[in-house]
Amino acid sequence: MAQLGETDRRRIWRGLMRYLSFGWPGLKADLRAAVDATDAWIDDNAASYNSALPQPFRGAASEGQKTLLFCAVAAMRVGIGFARALFGEVD
Image (cartoon, rainbow, N blue to C red; front, side, top):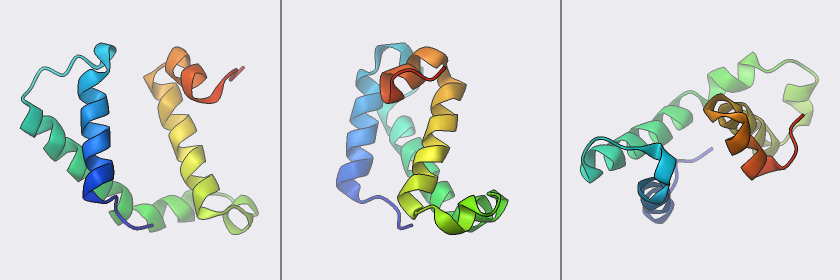
C-alpha cells in the first residue's frame, strides 16, 4: 500500500487538531511530523502485518479489508465509544 498523499495527511492532521478529546499538548508542527511518521511506519511495516494475519484470511482478504481490520482494532484501543462512532455497534 502506498503512503498517503499530502492532501490526505493534511486532512488527518487538521482532523486531529479539531478532535476535542485528542488533547494534543505540543506544537502543530510536531503533530504533523507524527502524522507523517505514522503513515511511513504503516507503509514500511505492511509486509510484516500481512504475514502476521492467519490463513485463509490473509490470502482471501483484499488490501482494503486488511486495512479496515487494522483500523477497527486500533479504534478499539482508543476506546469503545470511538470504535462505535466509526463502525456502529461493536458488541
